[in-house]
Amino acid sequence: MIAKAPRGTRDVLPGEVHKWLYVEDMFRKVCRNFGYGEIRTPLFEHTELFQRGVGETTDIVQKEMYTFEDRGGRSITLKPEGTAPVVRSYIDHRMYAEAQPIKLYYITPCFRYERPQSGRLRAFHQFGIEVLGSEEASVDAEVIAVAAVFFEKLGLKGLELRINSVGCPECRKEYNRKLKDYLRERLPKLCQTCNTRFDLNPLRIIDCKEEGCQKVLEDVPLMLDNLCDECSRHFDRLKQNLDLLDIEYMVDPKIVRGLDYYTKTAFEFVSKDIGAQGTVCGGGRYDGLVEECGGPDTPGIGFGLGIERLILTLESQGIDIARPENMDIYVVNIGEDAGSKALEMVYRLRVSGISAECDHLNRSLRAQMKYADKMNARYTLVLGDEEIKNGSGYLKDMRTGEELKVALDVGEIRETILQKKGRN
Ligand code: ATP
Ligand code: MG
Image (cartoon, rainbow, N blue to C red; front, side):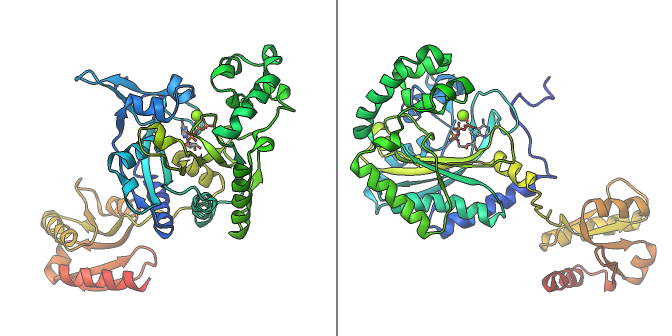
């Protein structure tokens, strides 16, 4: 039991970590080009932040949070998502007093107590961005563009962008009445969860995945048909801006985020290649959130992008991320003198900035060569009595088989490797 990872968690092992480094690096590059700065917030926050900032009626707060009391008797919750902590930090550090908008990105672990399945873990990771301080639809398009460009740079195909508008508290008041009138008489035909949502969060009923419910909801009144002038204009501008940036989208009036502080734009990027958990990225505008969390009335918008689902999509599309060379040089050594010489040489090479390895198990020449190959070493150098006596040996290029005579001198070996690497 103690040597088994907890349910819903997984290790990223050295053999696959290059995929993570690659997507992280690409995400950072794209964010930098779009003018975002990185923010790192703690792994835990006061429970109340998520109760307020994610919302009491959401699945996350009702049943998915890792909440515990610390030794000082405070209620603490492990980050289930990235937006509320960023909003907390924005208020905490009075970023609203700086030049707006504030554009931030993050890479973070998240924790949710869910039923583990493919693409759904209890400890998972997200890329995310948030823009605070502008209500313009140009920002909505820009936020969506960050995700679109990121996917494009990774070579991902066929991720479908779906957009919607969930209105604002103004237009939603009237709409909620219509929605509830429609739902009230159909409640007996809706599932248990939908029934519990009727009073607190009726909008969420619309995206229920139950087939029976979807049938009942076929001609449900949609927020999109009931937007006020301002929200309607905002949505039109968003679509114009996406057209301007050549970003393809489809309007899906059933994407919802049913809380008062989620406003206007809601969007998702969905992959068809990874099964039921296909939403790789989800985001939207939250013009009421900063105020809800105790800050000044400030508009905001952002997205969260699941890294595990992203990597699953990359793998399912056969996108190969080259494994970097692990080792510049493997020094093969035979005999006791050679052993000491190799130890010293490898150490000095490492200190001088060359990645190097040697044998620590008294393996045969053949076994060491095999090991060097497995370690993905670019060069090998065999050290035996003969080489030590002559003060020289052969640097072998493991890709081409080419051999080059070198003095057993760390400076010379280093220069040779750097020169040859520079040529590739
Ligand atoms: P879902 O519809 O899958 O439950 P969600 O609406 O709860 O997703 P968000 O809160 O919008 O998701 O989180 C943003 C992204 O984080 C998701 O689109 C998904 O890629 C990823 N994500 C969410 N929950 C998990 C999880 N339990 N395991 C892995 N990735 C997740
Ligand atoms: Mg969820």
